[in-house]
Length: 279
Image (cartoon, rainbow, N blue to C red):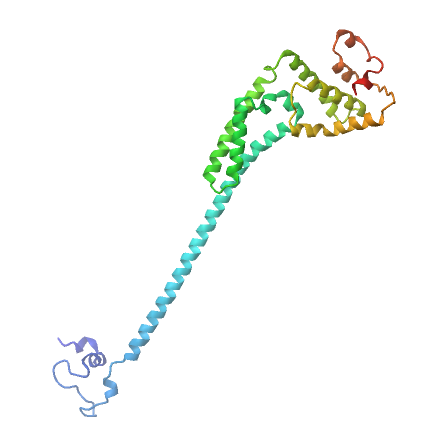
């Protein structure tokens, strides 16, 4: 069966260069055996055009693929960054929870008097907690989230242990006389910190509490700052009241806190000059 039956005369002529596939000469349609040489040449322009189109399509495809990969990498990178940021924020929230709890304790003189062991650097659990605080603060400034997570986890455990120990211990580890002084000073400070009370009563209560605590416990700096306004009021009152005897009427609650003997408890008011002396 002849190839020309399936391929068409033009294609056969292009492939064979004008020769008859059966072995004879190419037929002529009225122009003779010489024919038109231009019709016998292979259409190379068509080949180059096809190759150019294919090359252009390949370049476009490569560019599109590159841009697609870059876009996907950008999306994935942003997703990783968002996940890392969310994780860091969660760790920081746990860290800040402990910092705020300890800061609240350290700034509250009444809480300190209830749990002095939490500020005592001779207590092992307190020391472990303070070391964990430093380690977590260092890890927070670093880029290693796993290290930060471990440091905060250690801090939370140390804080729970130190706080629970301080709550259980209270002031029971102190001598009886110091426990009594702390209890009385705490009651006086409640009066001193109550903004609804009279100014002279608050000043007197603060001065007496300060005397009771002197040499017994050292109030943390943050808690002392809470008492600073009272301290300034006491100093101002002493300065302006020099040479003047002022005998304010104390409240019954304040007088009961000041009493130290059954006889004083039975009296309706302190002896003359008592408040001026304690202020």
